[in-house]
Structure formats: C-alpha cells, structure tokens
Amino acid sequence: MLFGTLSASGEQQRSINLANKTTGNLFHLNYPQTVPSEVDFTQHLVAPLGEVILLELHGVGFSEHGCHKGGFIEIYDNYADRNGTLWHLCELNHNPGGDEAPSQELSESAYSAEYKLIENNLARPAPIYITSYLNTLHIRQRTVQGLAVRLNATIRLQADIAYKMKLIANDEEWVEGCSPNPCQSGGRCITQKDHGICQCRGHFTGRFCGLTMCELEPCYFGKCELTASSFKCHCQPGYMGQRCDEKPKPCEDNPCEGRGECHPKNGGFFCRCHAWWEGARCEKRMMHIPYKPLSERMLQEPFWLGLITVFVVLAVIGLVWCAKRHFPEKIEKLLADEAHRNRSEYRMFLISWVIKELIEV
Image 1: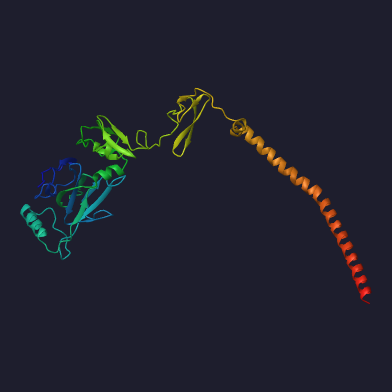
Image 2 (image 1 turned 90 degrees about the vertical axis):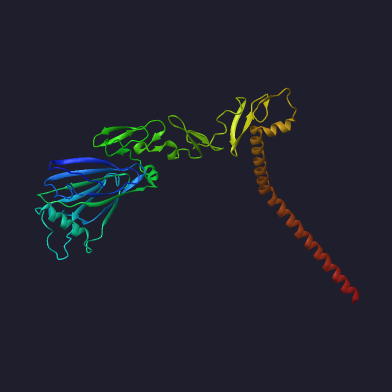
C-alpha cells in the first residue's frame, strides 16, 4: 500500500519507483483524515522499463469542462502521444438519493465511517481503467477552495510485450525528465529545455537507451553483430555495403586488370581485351598473332561491316531504278511481237480453211 501524510504547503511532487510485479492501493492525501486545503500535489509513478502501469480508479468520472466543486484529479502520460495525454477526473455522487456528499468539516470518525459506507455501497459506479503507454504516469491531486476529490486507486504492473516495438516505431528520443534518471545501460540524462535526452553508451541506442543497435534491424540483407561501440553487418551473397543494402557492381574491382575494357553482362562481366592480351580477365599474354583471312578480319571490324551494308543498300536501289526505266519498253515490244504473231497465224488458218472448202466443192 502506498500512502503518506502531507501538510497544506502548496505545489509539491514526489516520484515513486515501483518494483517488478508491484500491486497496491493509492489513496488521497492524509488518508484517512480530511484532505488538506489548497494543495497541488503530483505523484510520478515509475515502473521498470518493459512494464506498464494499470490504474483502477473508483468513485470518479471523466470530465471535459472541469469539476463543479472545484477540486479535481489529473492523470497524464507524457509518452502516450506526441504532446502527451491528459485525463481530467471529478468525484461522482455516491449518495443514491442524490444529496450532496458530506462536507470535509465532518469529524475524523464520521469521515471514516462515511468512506467505509461508500466503499461498501453496492450502487457505486463502475471503476475507470487507465493504462500507461510506456512505464510512467503522473497523478495530480488539486484542492480548490477547500474542496478536493478523494483518490481511491489500485495500482498493478504488467509486462509490456510490445515495448521494444513502441520504441522502434517512434523516432522520438526525448524523455520527460532526468529525475529520476530514466536512461538504461549506463546512459547519461541531459536536460534540454522542458525535456531530457539520454546519451547512450556502447551499442545501446533509442529512447531510454533501452535498445541495442541490432534490435533496430539495420542490416537489410544480412545478419547484425554487436561490437563494443556499434554493430557490424554480415551480408548475404550478392549484397554489400555497411547495411547490406547495395548490389555489387561487376566492374567496380577492375576484373580486367587494366588490360581490357570491362562491360556488365547478365549480372556478371566480360572483358574486351586490348592487343596482345586474351583470356576471361585478359590475364594471358599472346605469344603469337593468330592468322585470320582478310575477309574474316574485315567482317570483324565495325567500319567494314558498315561500309558493306552501305554498298548493299546502294546496289538494291540501283537495281530497282534500272528495272523501272528499262522494263516497260521491253514489255511493250514483247506484247507487240506477240500480237503480230497471232495475226499471221490467224491469216494462215483462214487461207487453209478456204482452200479446203474449195477442194471439197
């Protein structure tokens, strides 16, 4: 059970470090006596990293417009959003008849009896549950004009199985304060304006220095290994670079050794060797010049291939031009000769037919 006695001395704050698997109750100031007047008191609950705080609050309800009695309870979580999350709570009326709650001027015994009656009232409203985003919560109790909200809460700690993913997904590195020191693994907390920041040692990083560099999975196509001050990536075959995110360039290491020109090909390379060199990497010196016919050497030269292509195209164009110019005259002459031959054959046929008819007569 967490409790303490506090005099009415204005704004105060206290940090409470919770151990693993803590369970307990948190009551209002000076419980079971009356709440001090004009008090602004904040309790900073801090759980071990990797656990969240579960609050179960009784006799209060959420309010967006303030409490009509003046006093209130605020619970805020600096890590729940970029600007934090605030819950404003007011005391609910526990009397089923709708009468006002007893005033704080009741005697100590009457007040205790009233509180026990409220605790055992079957008609009291359902509790409110609030869970911290990471491992801290702030509970502020404010008394205004002698009126306060009575705090009755149960605190439990629960393992946060997703806390590493929360730290990885959020690139923010600030912490809400340096007291108590939130930095893990020997990290140093430095105050900067309204927040603090952790300077991590060795291969630790992130908010609270709660992650190792390998937990951020920096190696895209490889396996991460921690070193004394950083990390090292062991890349898969076919990848290179500090984070294994680069494809190797086949010609980057000069595989032709300056004795030829390297050209990428199908994920690999081939070397076009200079004179007097041969081999896959132009590593062999030619001891003799191989004989090749002139025609074969000419065909292997790009200049001669281009020149031959030009001559072939010109020859085709010349043939087409000659055909268009001379063929019409020859065709016309052939047609005329054919017509003359046909007429001569027809006359001979007529003469033969006439002679035959005369003989028969």
